[in-house]
Length: 108
Image 1 (cartoon, rainbow, N blue to C red):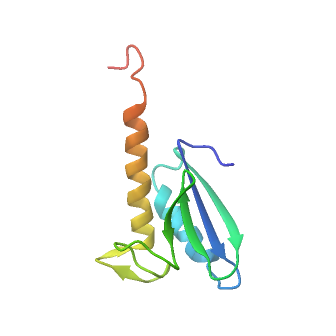
Image 2 (cartoon, rainbow, N blue to C red):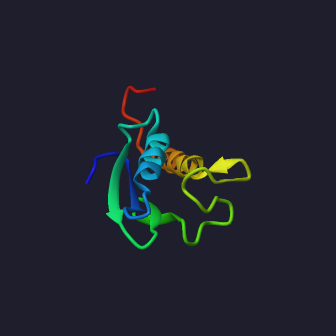
């Protein structure tokens, strides 16, 4: 498994051609934070495009959250793409993880 403070896994349908969408979502989700986010791309089938953050399903193309677009490429809902939606979830999780880290002595 990839190293990082948080783990992002994207399961994408190979026959559907979702590889490029998976790489695009992954790249945007970790932009500027690549040492803090471990990324795993997992080939799948049956129309799957699912995103897991620390093992929790945060996006499913077949049953997207109400505030997220349905399609992983080009679809936008309320001005937010799937990549932006996932990035927001990653940054929120990272801020939670950072807040839980003890402050090292002398680091003030």
